[in-house]
Length: 513
Image (cartoon, rainbow, N blue to C red; front, side, top):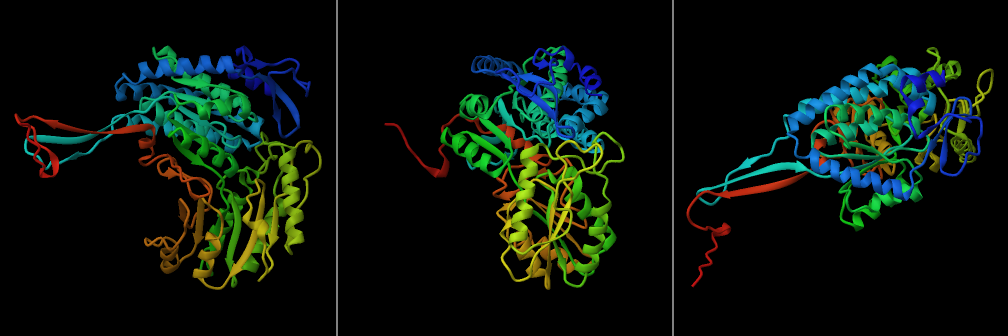
């Protein structure tokens, strides 16, 4: 299966990809192994960039930007349209490669590539809507307006859990804005990155525009550190942990560059007593179990009203006990593996801490074993939180399918519990009452403190049309839709004097003798 996918996507002819020997788990220096998390075995090796090859890529990106920014934005949109159409052709094999390499179930892998197709469509329309404002001047015979100009080569650092779409959000918008993308992907998903980038670069080059989509693969120390320190990169868009974000943000700020940070999330769903529990169950189940809990928007905490917490908990426990865990490429599978053994160990440590702090494991709590589960599989887990007792583990983001259940009496108490997290990415409430919903969405800012707020929806599954991102330790960045495009451009205020005299603003007169 793996060789078939690699051939379909042209990876067998890519100089970076080393197909033989794939059974050696101690590859030669300069090669990283892409591992199948469902089996714990190598798929292929990938040659890493060096300082010299990185510098060559950067020089090509700078030159490519100088050419690309001169192309009219609607023409750039035509290129992105063809790239989106090409991804449509590769939707299934590319989605299956995502499933193979990072363990997402097939439907989610294909859905991720669909996100890149969708953002390409969005960007095509945007290429004719990069609007600036016109404003009145206080001086007669003067005109003022603002325009948005290409920013430069942008650096994209992506995490393993969205090895295609996060790059797409940045690269497709950046392309219509006139920017070149330099992408450093996760070393857990290099094959997806090579295939994804090659499709975009090939389409652009065939249309006469080369060096628009550049790729560098390497360690944080060798390649990542160079990227974030490089003054030729005016914007770094980084997705990953809060720890990583603090390092990137600090380095880029010191050189007065821009950062777009999409970091961790510790997301909660509030369920009111009047909620549609069938609807709530579906939203909680996907949010907590989908992608094996490895989304930044995964549901980590359930805050349920005391009147319905028991029946809702019972239903979730029953569903968790029956969930189909296994090969992510099997259409019947709902939960695939964690990305590696380190993630399994972190999951087990979190379970142990939860027990030490008085938590009650209602279902799950261990490795998942059985036929065909030779990789990094764990049991989706539900833990009841002790009442009136500190439970600090629930305030740590564990990238695994652990759901902590709290109960509450009043909606104000529930909102305070939801906001009691360092991160502020995604939030949700299930209710049939307008008062609870409006409190949750308070225009005074007294409701959810997250960047994403949903009513009668789960915390996962954002559409590309809205700006995606969060507050507090989530980093404050915004990607994808709405006016996120402005981060990839620079604003210029223009004032034109079409009169015959020099006039100063604020009525100042400064005559020369």
